Image (cartoon, rainbow, N blue to C red; front, side):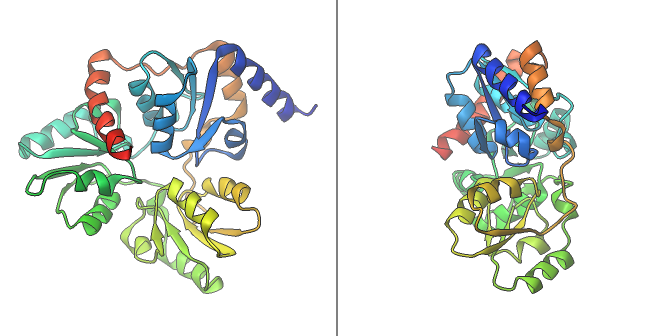
Length: 305
């Protein structure tokens, strides 16, 4: 038995002993995706966490995702293989900064992208993901002022789709903003019949080239269903592993070769094993913050349902 197979066998054994489930985001490294019980986007992982009967959730993603699972599952132990796996976008806004913005716009409805800390969610009225942000904003009564934090690119896409003008915070995803239209144009020139699937965290000059703008789960679904033999994918390239597994007969071209999220790649098989052995790296949220944040997340899930 080679080293990787031995690791996987140990993880499988410990997972049963601990009554644990392993959840992985679509951007994780291939071997983490392969050992996971479920691979998905932020919304899918939140729903899976909320419904699981497992007592332990090993969350392979970045910190805000594990926090969301802990918000939804206070009776479960949520562990991260690497607690340092954070999200630069989530770190761009703090609870204090959001409270100051709310004071400037009293009465505004605060929509927070799921890529935020639990404290920011606790200061928000409703949460959203890239797959349901349009629906969430459409659910807010006309005439209500809307604050959208922290991703300005997703916010601008939502404005275009809904016709609702919003107060937009100046945050962004460092991986997606590294995408360059020139590189995408080269891919389009080389594969002129290939549809372009774009994540809405991307800058406007990338989004305007899209055949469809989709969350990572949407990119996976459309890729499976598409009759195209070659598809250009504009998002963090970790998703290519899943796309190839689900549609091995197709060719997937990343629009950006250097847009990896280093934080997403911090989780490894070894760290999954260690966290199951030691039962450490638990994500703990103060009760008062968890209860307030739960309200914003629950509203999002009601719309998703």
